[in-house]
Amino acid sequence: MDERLEAFLRERLRAVGRNVERTRAAFSEGKVGGDDDAIAALPTDDVGRAQLVCRRHAVKRAATIDSEGRPACFDAEHVDCRGCVEDIDAGRIETWEADGNQNTDS
Image 1: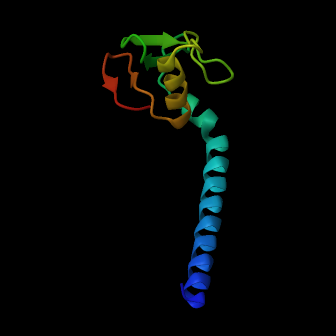
Image 2 (image 1 turned 90 degrees about the horizontal axis):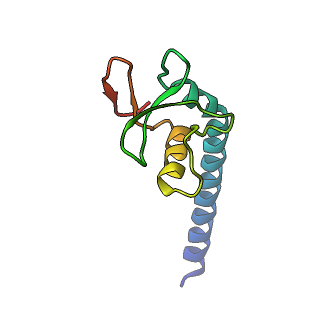
């Protein structure tokens, strides 16, 4: 391969790598700052429990959320429960309102 082409490709790949790292860092900073916002955005009942649609049992459920962002019904051994916590963190958990209407995301 031509040395100029190698140098060009090496330079472009390094630039792409730097951009990926900047994007990853910015995403992580935004995620850390937004964790509480995702939990605060969840609809709640009169007692303050989050109104979630349980991924494990596919039912509407009102559950308290602990300090680590996990619902009271969380089971660390179950894949659906772990996915639920990931969805809460990402702000894409399925929720429902007190009037019975189901939301697609929080």
